[in-house]
Image (cartoon, rainbow over all chains, first blue to last red; front, side):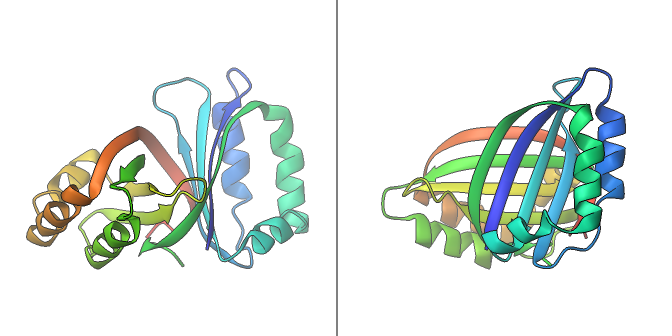
Length: 97
Length: 97
């Protein structure tokens, strides 16, 4: 499996709006086994995303899904910066679809 | 919801054994909505854990479940160090049970 742990920073005051856009955009995606959106409770603007995919290819292909592209287009103006981008190799556990 | 992103380091050469112990110990736990165990592909010994719980209290209570305590006892000698312990506030997504 292929995993991502990412942290990014919303434009000041826009975190709730950004998260709402991301939740709306959480459509079923081929090969997506987990996709968790979380606030960073230690900051006003931080957002964590943790993802599990069956392969890097499925993750890459998801970026071409029309609804995902539309979500990215709506989200980008609400994002001030990308701060962490960690790749992992998930091996199992609970909640992997 | 309450989330954790943790990174720890296995004793040299013991990562596979540590992960096997953790996978065996992935029993259903009250309030546990996601629990993903992953290798760090950039190191020989790194392990990432990403967790979603309904509350911090459920996470804390899980540590008293006999099978979880047994897993921790088996895992501890295989862990060389804890390197990240990040608390999050998950708000939704995919694969949250």
